[in-house]
Length: 72
Image 1 (tube, helix red, strand yellow):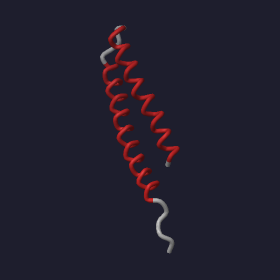
Image 2 (cartoon, helix red, strand yellow):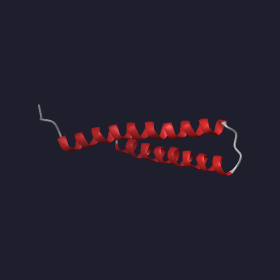
Image 3 (tube, one colour):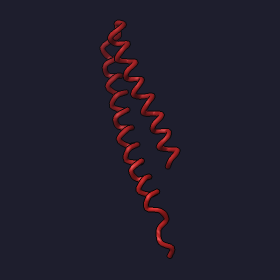
Image 4 (cartoon, one colour):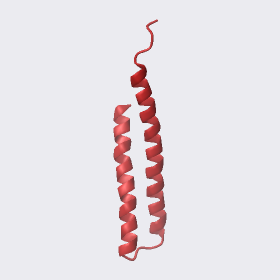
């Protein structure tokens, strides 16, 4: 689970900084209006990834703090 959390963090950074790059490019050079759709998809993907990662971190922390269950 820890590896999945780390991979989601990397994906979040890629999507978030990708959205920033698209936004800056839109302002500096003449890009078609479809670039705003690409920006929205990147930013929305970053938000969704962040929310999913946060839920996994919460589950992981609960699992770590709870420790092993009672031995049956």
